[in-house]
Amino acid sequence: MEMPKGWFWSVCKRGRPYIGVLFLQLGYAINNLIVKSALNEGLNPYTFSVYRNIAAAVAFGPFALYFERKIRSQMTFSVFWKISLLALIEPVLDQILYYTGMKYTTATFAIAMCNVLPALTFVMAWIFRLEKVNVKKLHSQGKILGTLITVGGAMVMTLVNGPPVPLPWTKGTGVHQVVASTALVSQDQHIKGAIMITAGCFCWASFYILQAMTLKEYPAQLSLTTLICMMGALQGTVVTLLIENGKSGIWSMHKRTEIIATLYSGIIRSGASYYVSGLVMKEKGPFFVTAFNPLGMVIVAIVSSFALAERLLLGRVVGAFIIVLGLYLIIWGKSKDSSLSSSKNNDIEMFDKETSNDKNQDSIIVSKEGHKGEANV
Image (cartoon, rainbow, N blue to C red; front, side, top):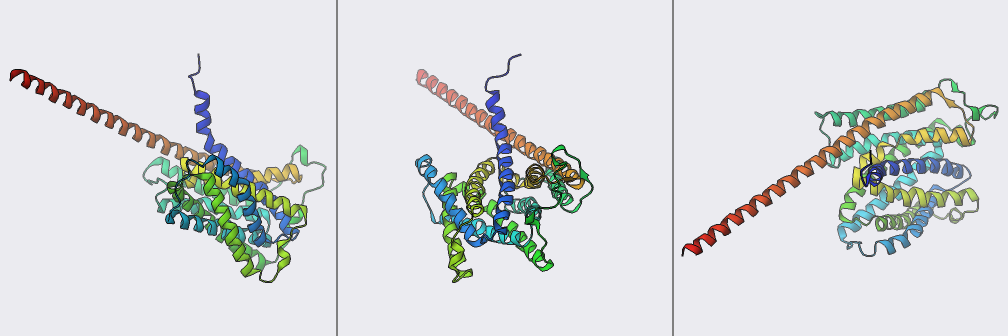
């Protein structure tokens, strides 16, 4: 039995959004570990936000100028203020709030708090009609239930410990404690950090919603990514000068971890993630991009197990299975959305064809009657 022609490209096309969100979550997880290490060594979160956006703009600017020189739409006032607002919401406010909150807490706690992001984005996308939801339909109920399950699974990973799971690569290492980045902090700092991270997640969800709206007016994604990072660097500089007034030493970076964190976070976490999320968002919507966010905790647990020889606790394993179950329900619900929209498009195309055929037949009949009348005359 021969495979139909083009089946490979068809499979790749259907799988692109899933590969995209997996890339995003892997990038976010690694970014958290690298940046937390740099913050522990004295990295200033305000100047870090500025430098990472500069790095992203420098890295993606040339590609935007070359590849989108013919498709870049005209800059209007509506697009300009949306780009300015996008730059303020995520590259400035979200990043400063999130990384300052991480400095007061831990990397694991910060990524755990980010699991409220799918629920926030889902509600906001529903309000702004960017997500199709009909509570009477089974696939919409699946999306809602899947969102709740993924958030619940992430909370299980965070709150439930249980006995350690024996793994071959963690035996005999003696590294069973949390790394130095998870040093104890006071209760006041912990609460302050939690509030900042939650506020940052709200900004992050707002960014995805506004990005989806902006892409409809300005579809040049590389150019949009570059402009957001440029505006973010400019606005971040103003905010840093206002908050850190008179502290000239904060602008210098001498440690290797600070430079690595800035370059990685700028190129991958800012530039590449904005671009990839825009590509996925065009096809699947903003909720789909954030629905896989709890997967970041699973990735962090696995990476920590290999890189830091930390033992996997049973609670984390159970939470990971719950997250996978919730993601399955979300994917199933989104696939039903895609099939319904494609069937509606096919019905519209069939109706248009039938209408055009009827019009053509009517015109043929009218022309024949005209010729008969001329012949009778």
